[in-house]
Image (cartoon, rainbow, N blue to C red; front, top):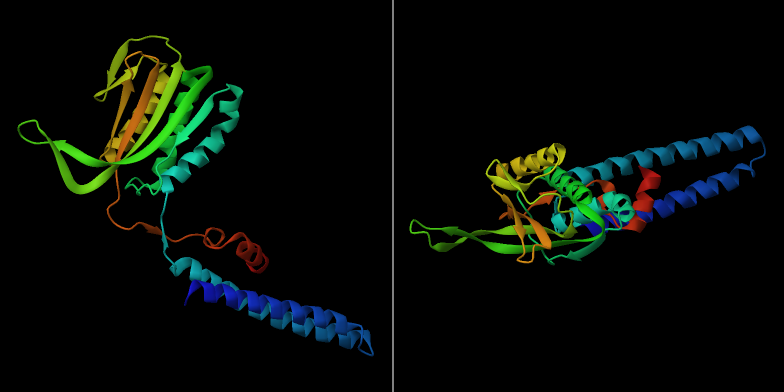
Length: 257
């Protein structure tokens, strides 16, 4: 059944139920004796509850069977992670700059793992940047390029990559020494931060991605770049009721579920 038709049905049913309920309550006082009025009102309310039970079942059916195409997931998860860490960023007066690609493809990385990656990188950034620094976060899609047997770059036709870049300006230069960890060069940092980044690297590599540090020539800007394979298939999920409907629809559903 068409979604708009379902919502229209719910609205119309809500109006009918509210009218019946109001009329039943008003009619209670019009009975010759209080007991008959209470009995009538109770019967009407019980019938309304049965209809509400049917509506609840119908809404649960919609929730469990209506696929929702995933769109702009990575950009949305970055915004949610920034919102979560905003108090710490504000405390250190770290300015955030965004440069998100519109219509960014989905990635094969599961949402739960992506949330961990973003949370961990923002924790690293918060601990690494000095007060008043800048953090620029950008996303873009790029073609998958690999090398052939002769070392020449070859554009792969199959799929794209998502690039997520975290650029740190005026980061704390505690040391320029590098250490090797799982094939990736990390700045010499406290063991805890190194371990967290290695956990991120493990998840990225498990999903056939890469993670690397890049530094500009002036050595005033360092970027942590994640390259994640894009999802070639249409990604869908089955949203919760709160995610499927508009704000006005959700207000209605909260009254019924």
